[in-house]
Image (tube, rainbow, N blue to C red):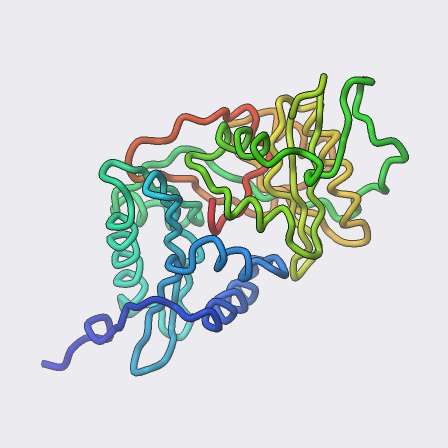
Length: 297
């Protein structure tokens, strides 16, 4: 009996050039990757990118990012359309999950943002639904405001680079399950992007990044103490993308994030199911107005 395609599948680490191909496939799927996503993702964790090879040909891939041993994230899961329906994606997905578990400390959680239609599939792999992360789009972002202050005189919007990194990392840890200093450094300083912070009474009250994508710009992360700070940051970040669509991936378990999207006349265009394998992390959900990426968490 001849082996099935899944039995002949080779699972291995990707090369840097293959990550560029994965990003191109993501663009073809309508995921609208950032112009420099591959560079930042690779610098964060080059061992995260796993290839599926059949007869010497790259047919799929995905990321299994490990943030130390404390938290993992599965994303960027793609199988080329002509190779779907043969069990290849199933073999790749399970191999990635097992490899990521082996990279983490025992009991560490893994997260993913999966398309809603695949939610039952991921549940069979042990993942439990937490909430939806909803992509909103605004087609005509407003012009940049003339002032640099938010609603009161003690609140100031400044370049993120002016904030000590230790403060940024500490704030990020309230919104993300593990330290990710390498990622934050690369993400906030990438080309074709704008990174801003909000200071209130001399302390960090929120920060956000917007980056140019194949279409328009995406804002993420957008972390803030409250909707007023989030709105001040969003307005400036959205203005960076004037002339094209702006996207925000807002978590459904923060009603203020949905309020922010409605306030800016954004419409829902896509949604993912945030799911966890293992204990869900304890985060300041009220601060999360926009998740960073669907690919790395």
